[in-house]
Length: 304
Ligand SMILES: NC(=O)c1ccc[n+]([C@@H]2O[C@H](COP(=O)([O-])OP(=O)(O)OC[C@H]3O[C@@H](n4cnc5c(N)ncnc54)[C@H](O)[C@@H]3O)[C@@H](O)[C@H]2O)c1
Image (cartoon, rainbow, N blue to C red; front, side):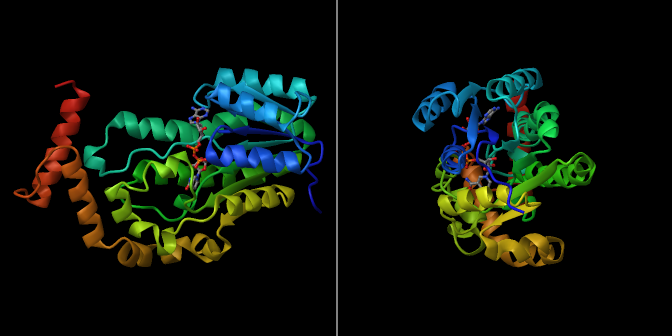
């Protein structure tokens, strides 16, 4: 049976972002009341104003890296709208793109903390209210939950972690009438992606954003997510053509690793990366390049 969104309250994190703003508008158009949460208070405030008065849309400054802050905000949202039915954990970061050898621990930790721990905190803070309404929790993950790109391990790990967490919570929470879903879009235009479209390392890894990595229109992602909430779907894959890749990811993995992420493209990407941080790899063997990246990262970490 369709889960009618009319007069339901939906809280979204990352509501100032490309996807978040469009989702907020689409949910409002379905008659939902929307609580817009983001680090960027000005953007969510203006967006809320454009969507109606405070009885149907309101912005809150919220940080998914801070559980106390999120708990306070979720309590306020539930008090303001007299209940909270659905939470969409959409805040995220692309994280660093480059080899592990040149990635600082802090960049890894920050990506995991926003993309994975941030979803956990969002659900944890909202759960008492959502459980009361027998509502729905949705995490915006990614196709990266299933297809794990080289030179992007923090993001892959964070989004695979979100998938695992949602799969674990689903049977745990269904006892209480709460449903749990995860959304897995492929690339679409937003601040996060616009920043990397011209990055040669990214273009090498993701096949010039073609084939499996072709951008999907953001409207398609928004429509699929809203329809997925209305079905209280377990998993939402966009585009739908990628569903077999997602569902059979374990079987496809060796093929993807061999034929999609070709060695020549990855080595070219690493070479771009080495050059972009001011090292000349023309005289270096691959091992020496890796060692140079490690040394540079260690020196940066220790302030050398
Ligand atoms: N754009 C894509 O191609 C793509 C593909 C798959 C999944 N996703 C996921 O979709 C979600 C939305 O991303 P987007 O593409 O709209 O990016 P975006 O950069 O436009 O939006 C991300 C939003 O998250 C907010 N945010 C970041 N850290 C936060 C924090 N600590 N607390 C609260 N808010 C915080 C930012 O302020 C921003 O408004 C992310 O989870 C992203 O990983 C994006």
